[in-house]
Image 1 (tube, rainbow, N blue to C red):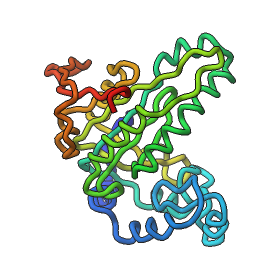
Image 2 (cartoon, one colour):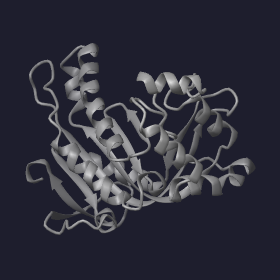
Image 3 (cartoon, rainbow, N blue to C red):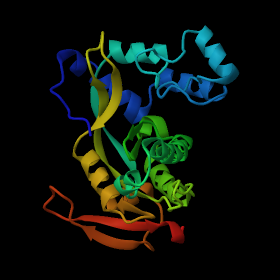
Image 4 (cartoon, one colour):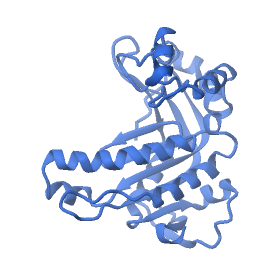
Length: 273
């Protein structure tokens, strides 16, 4: 979880711009996204969806939208935008965190390169699921994949898409580890107010990225850690916001670290989807 530093005056000036992008959808950016989504092929810029490979990638590079040197998750134009207009805003959204089960034990039983293969076999399908269901921010952190579903990128049914992503993640069949042991995952899903905006070093020289901050990030992380293998723990807030009929799922009260009141969740299992 990124720690929110005190915003600068420049960041305060750009708050409305960041709120528009992620809460409603900036008209110009959404136009770019529609145009670029028709061009092949992934991976794409996180902001404008400009393709980096295939014929579409060649076309984008000719237009100055190749992968940025400092941060290849964004095209050069969007990287320039992030640096020129740093800021952040509080936005209602859903977050999905996928956790690899028993990663420390797996790593202790194999070589570093073998464990790297296990991680890649987890990262690739998990990030594909989040991307294909309109998740925006995807971050790989050790044995964890994070994605957020802000309405400005994912649409008004952003919470439904987050629950749908959890369903698809639980259906994934991960290859076994090199020693033949099974590889499983667990998921946390939460909906609430998140702070989203620029994080990182100096806007001129350092690497800048878009990150999410706040206590709701911490809650989602704790949900993913608390889930059992093959489970997704979905807060009642996320269930309600999704509009999905999830009353048939087991209800559970969780005592999470750092929170006095228990958190009500629904339990989705891979075997019952």
